Length: 102
Image (tube, rainbow, N blue to C red):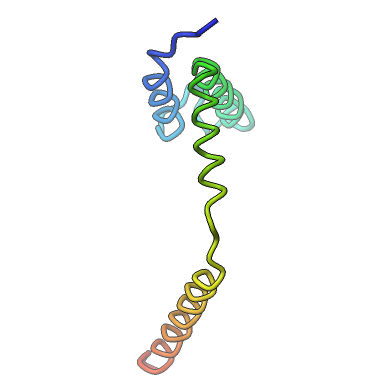
């Protein structure tokens, strides 16, 4: 049986808005209860949004995600990027020590 999912994007947007909103059902400054609503409502909302997606659509998305994970990996590219980040960090530290007024 195919489930309807026309409201799934709206529900997902509402869940993300609630997660990012500074306004909560129970304010966060109330000890324990303030974070308990986030701990319960957000996972339930995500579970409900996922449950509304039809099985065929979920299987197609999982197949696409699996195909992306099977792409080739370039270790040389990874090493080059890590070396560039380390060189940039050293250059930043060198510039800070060289030009920082003492």
